[in-house]
Length: 403
Ligand code: DI6
Ligand code: FE
Image (tube, rainbow, N blue to C red; front, side, top):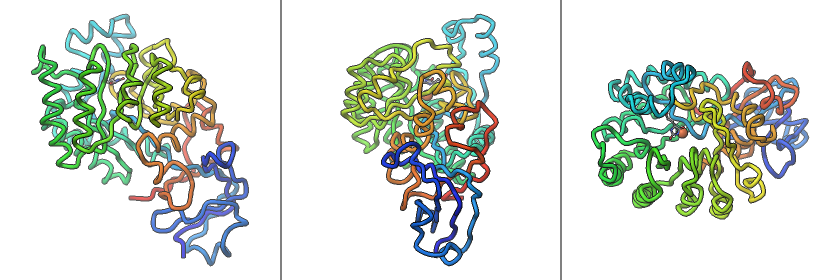
């Protein structure tokens, strides 16, 4: 006996083998013990719905999609940088703000000053805003603590929020995000600290599912990034990379060389790097919020990604500096209008492809038997509207496999 079944539904399963949106027009979906027990044409139901499940929902022709997945966020932090944003709008240069002690360092100061409860309290409403849009799985990075105590505090806060809110959280250790002030002028020593002390502590406490780094002129070099990635392998952790966001440092190829789950941003990635990503199965995570809010002009090489068969995910990059996003759905029309993704690619980017970017493709991202029962019911005439309306869309129903 199933727990619940939806009948009279249109399914956007997002299965690639089923054509556009993986659509099934006269569909039914059954769930049992937090897993999808059936997702297919109603004609294929193994019996009468009332006999099959304890609860029967008439979807009234509404669309059901997989629960949304935000596969790149820095959503746990303290304070905000609205004042800095206002200064930039008034003409101040990012570099000057940075030199005056602003930028990432101001969030590091605020995050270090907050205790774990305070971090949870400040981050909770941002997570709730995403959840109200149908987000059922989220990746959360550390990277504003930059020492053992504060990085583990951020990761514990991320885990706690997931448990408290009933949201799947995958946590990523981003110790190599910025150089903390106490290591000023000693960047190599900080990389050693990340690799030899912080990462083993995080791995031992099982606080992270993956390791990320910011490979950029203003952050860490490709060589330093490779050191971090080698340490990740030694600690049994998969990697992902902030790659080629502001300049082409060969980040895409570097990520591919370490079989990264994903390479993210990629505005300045070169074609050889894209080809290497395709060969390695590394997912491209596109972040139109950061592109928009930093007024970047160079768009990521989406055509080359398509031509080489690189999977494209879409995420919010929710962070206080470059993408103060409290919406994942808003990223769909932005990805479409700014980067040229089709509405179907944009929706796949926050479902199927985002699951691949987190190494969760067997568990989530499509409506398929055996996967987690994370799903959204939408009162829309067609799922393409998810990449059309800019703001204001909410699911009629959300079902979570946990919580
Ligand atoms: N790239 C980004 O866009 C963010 N981090 C990163 O590595 C910026 C984070 C911030 O400004 O606080
Ligand atoms: Fe980021």
